[in-house]
Image 1 (cartoon, one colour):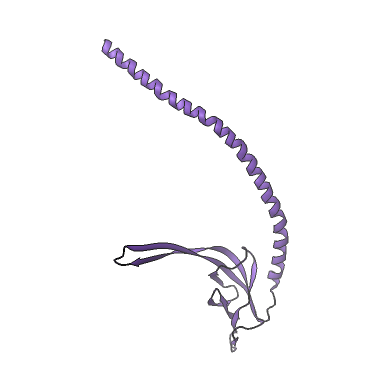
Image 2 (tube, helix red, strand yellow):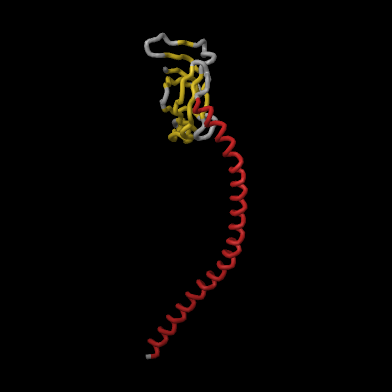
Length: 181
């Protein structure tokens, strides 16, 4: 079974286990999302079902594989004979999806129903604790390091100033010895 879905103003023909890149969708890596804008459903040997504009109960379920930015596009504008040039770059945010199921009735797949609640319940509580612990350890680590670095820095500068003075004095004495002989 295949479907034609609409996402980000574009249309994509998808089937189970297909991988595709769409404009950024809300969600984290591993989440299963529902795409409800199904424009057409089809099977081999049967006439396709076309929506007007969408098929009401149909849905496509996809797993988010990655959230990233696309390649940089350079936008260069120029007005000739006016010494006017503008150069800008743009990287579009995008989402990589793997189609889990194409459902004509809109029923969630078993894997999607199991994965979503478990991750949300487990990840939220430990994440908050870990963040507060990380902040505390960072603050403790930074405070003593700054004081120690401040004490060591003047000592190094003083030693660096003394060294050239000794070298200069040694050269003068060597020059005097040569002139006396």
